Length: 193
Image (cartoon, rainbow, N blue to C red):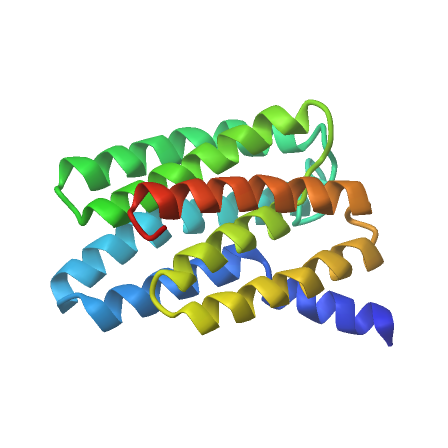
């Protein structure tokens, strides 16, 4: 039973689900249709769809042990794929004069992933945890209580990653530390602190 609960939490807390849902909700609630569609396409269509497709194909053909890319060595190719895409998307957002906070949020997400790549040389930090902690800070800028709820959920997510043996406690805490530091820097830079 514990394993099933952990699997459910890990699935709904996957950053490939939580972040695109957040982007779509925020964009379509706060922007005109044309702008919301453009930004959603740039972020979801250019980052998440190619990443999901790559992870699916690589896990299906055996290059990745699993969809989460839980092997530290296999993560190197994941980082080398996603970081250039994040850089290009960040550039596009700045170049098309999107909202400064949006541009900075994607820039800091790029920095978070780049730092995670460096950390991966030593320990396989939890990207589930780091990205969802970072996301909780983004949510806090819009709705403090919802952000706190996501932060608390991320604690459960960390527990699920340990139960599923995708990470150790040290790896979850390392991911949490990366997400916390980048999240705090982001909200300070954007003027929320």
